Image (cartoon, rainbow, N blue to C red):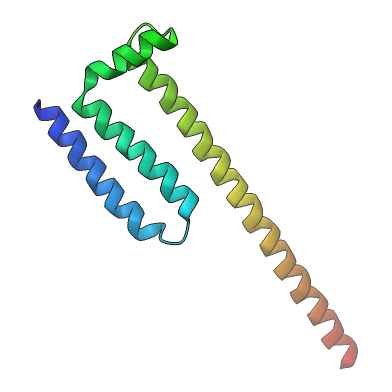
Amino acid sequence: MKGIQFILLGLLVLLFTYVINKLKNRWIDLVILCTLIIAGAVFIIFPDLTIIIAHKLGVGRGADLIFYLSILIFWFVIIKLYARIRKLEQIMTEIIRKDALSNVSKDKDE
């Protein structure tokens, strides 16, 4: 095993530990992330496997395959974050509306 493989596997272990602590109640996110981490570990340990998979999928190099998959994963994360931000905006809007309506009713009572 090469030095970069040890470094990358160590980083994957740290990432995995961090995510386990943060995503205790989000099983789907946890399963997806665990799958990605396991795939990353397999590709780090067996880098020639990416070349074999890339050729079977019609991609020239294994590095290109990893790059394409990374782009898709980043888009997934961006969409997930956007959806979460929209949900928080809706929750904040509801809270502000309820607060505004309760202040209006208090002003009428006085």
